[in-house]
Image (cartoon, rainbow, N blue to C red; front, side):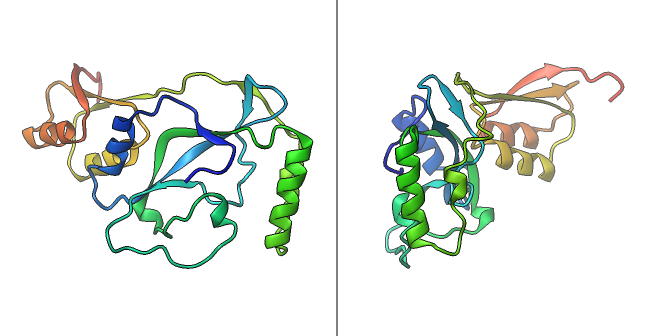
Length: 201
């Protein structure tokens, strides 16, 4: 489901994809990714949404008997994916690198292609380098830590929000106040619980 010239930016193993394709929340059907575009340097990147007008959905769970309908030439550039309600989509911790637009020639070709198939939109952002901001590309592994003294439904919603993009979730159990139900919930979502004390709440 990747565009020509795109590749995954990190060591995404089979286990990485299996984790995303078998989410704890069965209602999650697809993932959007962080997009990084290489320009004139091979060791520096930009991530300012150069393709902001195009869908960032790259990974989707397909079920037996489910057809992907409709025809969209722009969608064909990223592979055909089902249209998913926003509540069934989560952020992924996998990034995609595109080197196809490194030079002016490729940017012009891509601009002309998009302009031809969708003339109502302005695709000039594909040519604009005036606001190009580069930064060194480095490891983006993320650990999320949150001290907690009360769980329940809000804890479940929080876990569902961070689970797909956090490489590690650590919960600080404030003065051992978490219930057995909260502890079981955290274990089911793969979070690690450590003791902590929150002075003055």
